[in-house]
Image (cartoon, rainbow, N blue to C red; front, side):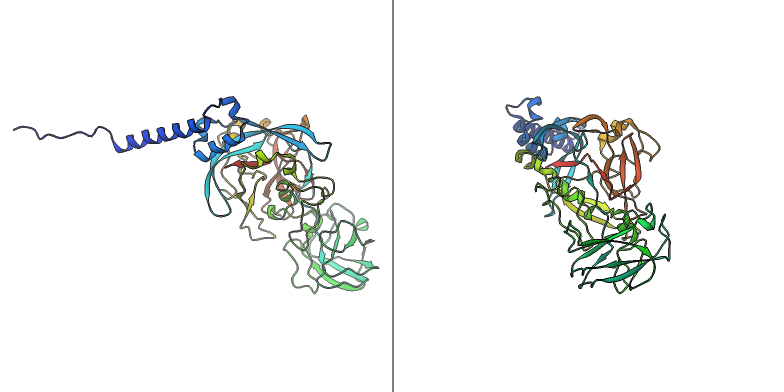
Length: 414
């Protein structure tokens, strides 16, 4: 019997799909690079953007490649720097309208010229109506260093605090003896000049403002709701509320890049001396960057531990993105391959006191000076302290939000 004639397919479907994909990639890459050498591609921002949009950037660029970007210190005679950005990751980003795009993820190789507070120590009282001049006291809700649970402290205002004004004080309370605590009144959250500053003493004379809790947004049972001790003493570790997030994402000049995020917010100390970070870049570089969704976990002591989504052009890396052992996994972004390769380890980095030379980061304006770097990840179990990278090359949890520090910000070409 003659065998039945069976026609064998010339090509399997999956093989054809791979070839088509390869040809599409080759066509897209050639279009982007037409007339451009590999070397010049690293300085051609428009073509870098086109390459990112093609989805094939990882076929041309490698993790660890550097894009050199001009940056001017507009606050110091327009001093010019070349700011290298390392390619740290390839992956999709989400824009505010929900669109998903492929991106080339970059991080500054050097620390910023400026040291900025993550966020200043907050006000402890916000005036919902005018607060008349007089004597007031409050009680501490917990023992925290030199602050003792149940003790009350009084102060006397000689001038009225207008509606919308603030009382700020008790800054650094765990480390400052009560005799040196002060209270200052301000006309609004944006005010930088105090109405007056008065001394504090132990006692219960005058009007009771209530109890200041160690954590929690406010003591809502008080007649005069008070902010918590940790935010008052050392600031707020929530990225969404941070001064650093506003500074990185503004091109405004001195005194113009910050606005209060809530009634307890306080201007950062650097507001009047520093312009927004983006003021130093040219429009050609800023035009290729996306304003992307950045997810950051809140702490579990003052907030509910859930996630905030901000939409940022520049942002601080998270603990997990730096290939550090996360406090909560899979919330604050994928780890960046750059850091896994640079650290030379196969599991996420341990915390202080373990040292990693790769984490050492030097200043853009002083390339032999090791710098402490802010990260955006909050300590999950406290409301004032953030994660950071110590100058010697270690991951540390315990940097008070009100402490000034440099950063190595990230951005995405998309």
